[in-house]
Structure formats: C-alpha cells, structure tokens
Amino acid sequence: MTQDTPAADPVLAGFRASIDNIDAALIHMLAERFRITQAVGAYKAQNDLPASDPDREERQILRLRKLAEEAQLDPDFGETFIRFIIDEVIRHHERAKNEA
Image 1: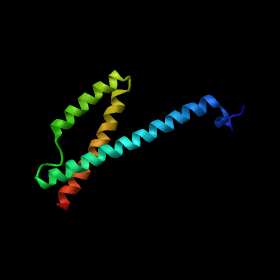
Image 2: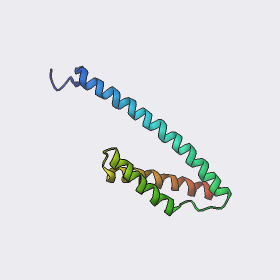
Image 3: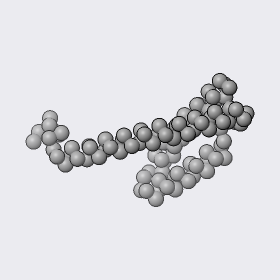
Image 4: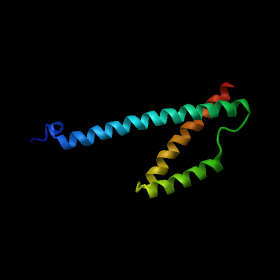
C-alpha cells in the first residue's frame, strides 16, 4: 500500500466513517442549540433583557470545563469551544434586540 491510497485501508476508512458520523451529529446538535438560543434571543428582545448574562456564562464555562475533564477532553479546548459558541449566541441576541 502506498501513501497515495490511504482510503484503500479498511481500518482508516472505518475510523473516517465514524468521524464523519460524529461530525454530522455535531452539526445537527449545534443547529438545534442555535434554534433554541435564537428563541431565547427573541424572548430577551421582547422583554428588554440584556443580550448577555455574564454570571450564567461563567457558570456554564466552569461546568463545561469540569465535564471536559471528566470526558478526558482538554478543558482549555472545551472552554475555547464553548466561548466561541457563547460569543456567537450573544451576537445573535444583540442582533435580535436591534431588530426588535
């Protein structure tokens, strides 16, 4: 087998198929999460609530860092990932507030 044909390796192909399935699940889970947070943003805008809740965000980060550690995932990576999502959610909430 050469390096030009890694897809012919059935073990590697199996790993990649599993990764593809996980990636698809992640996308669907993120889509559902954002559908819910967009509803939260609309609710906040209608009720003149702030787009951001720093206390909740910090609690979430601490909780998810602990979950990452328990799952043997680098907690710094977990925090970076969730902060990215939180920042995007806040951006959506601010846009909803400006459109209200």
